[in-house]
Image 1 (spheres, helix red, strand yellow):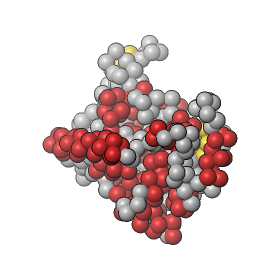
Image 2 (cartoon, rainbow, N blue to C red):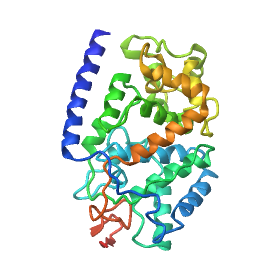
Image 3 (tube, rainbow, N blue to C red):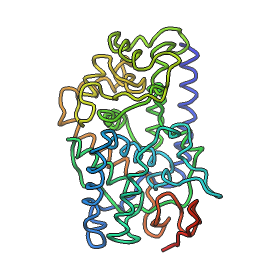
Image 4 (cartoon, rainbow, N blue to C red):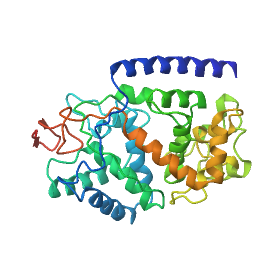
Length: 347
């Protein structure tokens, strides 16, 4: 226990130090984004995004959870700039291959379909970073969750940062102290942490993200003691020891494809799938416990906080004005030659 605590403390110290670097490098949020940004240049942008996601949901029930995760994983690395979408090239090491994303981040094909449709409707206008922000909101709305006016006007980066993706993205096996430090580093507090974790009310997760809890938690040779024993047996059946760790199961065992507050009642029943989920409720004495209890009892409060936190997250260091570019293809920087041999011109 002391070794684990020491490790978490050291990590927190490192992350708080990184916070200072980020703050010295520039503001965490900007006031230049606006829900009306595309009203004259691409007024049907949100409807186009919604239509393509609705079509994708017919054959892929987990796509909504996957798309909101892309927005989350984009914003936590150098801000909401679409960098996660860039593929490997001669000058770019893709964030898609960072450990938190490799073989788990998905939905890129749907993003490409959205981009193609938007390029047809309003060429060189809607950024890939904004596509991720709109797709996150539409995914939540389509699943029965809240709607909100998405602030828009982000531009796309011309670089990626695989190293930062490995360092800054919250992980499924991390202690609450580490999770809170990583959120603080991008200007998000404990309420934001709990509210945004509530996005796990829909979507799926691979066995690899929680199998540590089933057989040898923290090297103890035993399962995680905070895991409901009945639920433990169910998960061991889905993810046998030394089995296929790419098998997926529902993040929310109650209403897996609906955006609601059942995720939080699952935590109260010790049925949070990921360690990072259950830590929100099982870390005795932490402020997150009361927040979980509030969201369990009051779905309206959860929805309201979730909207506030999503808007805050979407405001993390966006590129605006003349910074960056509007990519013609979300996987490639303009004026670069892709693997298809085509030249993608700049604006």
